Amino acid sequence: MALKHHSDDKVRFDQQVDNSVSYLVPFLAHTKPLTAGLNVMEVGTGEGGVLVPFMDAGCFCLGVDLVPERIELANQFLEKEVAAGKVKFVCQNIYEDAFYSQYNGFFDIIILKDVIEHVPNQEEFIPYLMKFLKSGGQIFFGFPPWYMPFGGHQQVCRKKWLSVLPYYHILPNFLYKGLLKLGGEHPIVIADLMEIKTTAITIERFERIIRKSGLKVLYKEHYLINPIYKYKFGLNPRKQWKLVSALPYVRNFLTTCVYYTVG
Ligand SMILES: C[S@@+](CC[C@H](N)C(=O)[O-])C[C@H]1O[C@@H](n2cnc3c(N)ncnc32)[C@H](O)[C@@H]1O
Image (cartoon, rainbow, N blue to C red; front, side, top):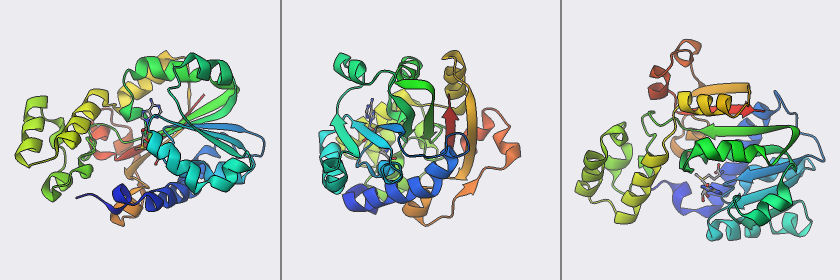
């Protein structure tokens, strides 16, 4: 069941803006209040909507993504802001030397919202991200833990029963793939879902990488109901109960989203 935001680019953009204004910026404000003049980078920016409140506050923003079509959309939706030099969108791999030489030590804030779970080898990627921070800079991560009911991103399946069935992404690869094939899912969707299975990230592994990278968790919030479910399913966001949040491993199965600021 493809949701509206999967097929309508403007809906997706508007949801990014609203989610950023209502949740991401207030969350960041606990450790890094938004002020003019900050340099902000979003890695995996998609259509660029997350950056809107930052550019409105007078920050310089850079949106990076690997998919050219999404960068093209970001440039269209924010044409005036791009022309005014408030934001720049680039389709580039941040591992490229040219990117590193231009931006190392440049950013006060780096944002990865719904991105880290798509990135291979996070153990290498997160310490690499730190090279782009100014002294005192902070990184925001928001992601769905792998073991949550839809941690496999199976909601993108075109067959309704496959998109609403929870937890089956945890099955061994051959069973998971077999079920997707049996349901008649498109080979491209199957390939995408199998790739996400290889980059899966849990709360514990994420926190371990943060510690090993020499970073500290500055603020965190776990959600029983992810703020973006407001747009996807009309559900009100809800923070996770403290007791569940404190239960290592178990919490992954019941937490649909986590927000972290590290620095
Ligand atoms: C689920 S979308 C999230 C878009 C946006 N951040 C939001 O919250 O709506 C994930 C995006 O991350 C991008 N992405 C994944 N890995 C990336 C990487 N290594 N570098 C840059 N972008 C990446 C994808 O192309 C995609 O546009």
